[in-house]
Length: 178
Image (cartoon, rainbow, N blue to C red; front, top):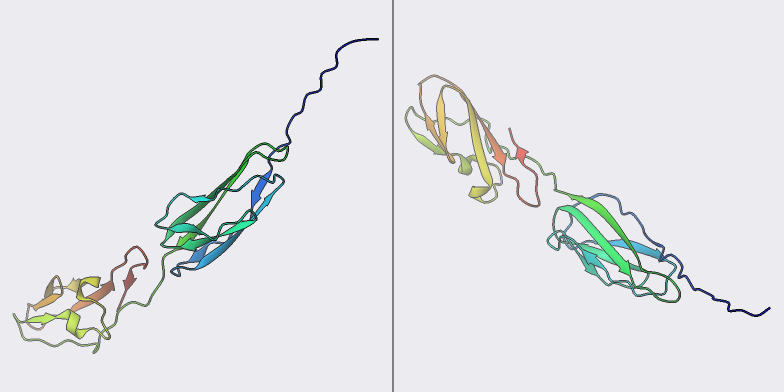
């Protein structure tokens, strides 16, 4: 028998998988190891979606360190090039970097005494304060008014409760004091 025989080559699937890091609390410049498992000898091209949260550090064909830069969702992707009889492949992994919890502010002395109509700088009454702009103050009762960090005494003989709060930012959570 005579005839033509055609042989077709179909590349194998570019199977790619990444290890799943656990969610973690923020520690600046911490490295989180991510392991790459692949069949293809093709080169891995690592990327992150949000460089303000994490960046690729020390990439290799078998893994990478995601270096923590901020809080939020760190998303790491890796496409793998076609090579050695395997098609391209890709994988993505994500993990959360949580803001840091800290202790709320407290007063240097639990009682603030001031004359009717006078003002008190609440920032000066805090125990070990951070920068003055890092706080807010709320009141309950009828004996005072707070504007910014200034407490104005009113209603002679009345009491008021002032609660300091250490404000949050991109790294830290709000922390209510007492």
